[in-house]
Length: 154
Image (cartoon, rainbow, N blue to C red):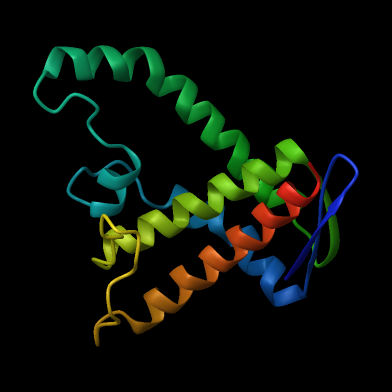
């Protein structure tokens, strides 16, 4: 993947395999479901007020539907806008791609016990998760490339 700033956004150049991978990210997120026993679900839908059930329920009632709608819009955009070859994205579309890639990265890290430590570094690779860690690092690199292109366009 290559990302570069263009007027009003970012241009991505992806080979067919990478474009297919990025387009598949929304499917991964959609497949998570809502089982709070799943560490990925817990990471993406944390309890905002763990010591106050009423406050958490109120937050979820007021914010939950809007957040779900925004996430759905981001996922739909990624599934349809990303193409092999050159894809031109507005700043807002590029930010949506960043959100989806970031959500997948967090979900994978949670499922594989590879959460960032407070210092921001990834733990050492483990025998049980080398593939997951490789994908997490690749997603982070993609986020870095898109972010650098967005910043360069300021």
